[in-house]
Image 1: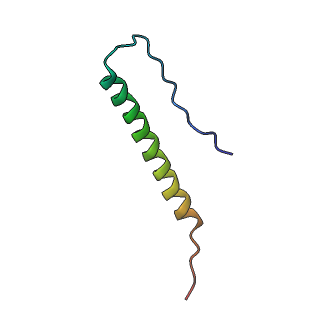
Image 2: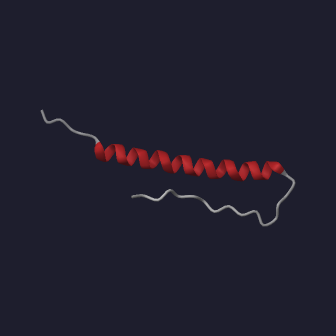
Image 3: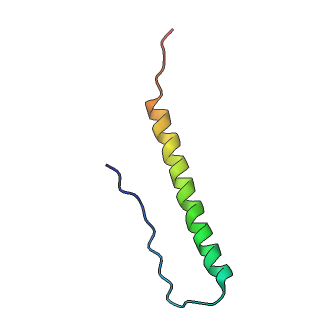
Length: 53
C-alpha cells in the first residue's frame, strides 16, 4: 500500500511576513496536487480495459 507523502515543513526563522508563508504553502499544495494528478493518470492508464474488436 502506498504511503501518503507528507512534506516536512519547518519554519526556522518565523517571519511576520505572512505572504512568504502563504507562498510556501501554496507551492507545497501545488506540488502535492500535481503528484496526485500524475498518479491518478498513471493508475487510470493501467486499469483501463480494452475491448477487442
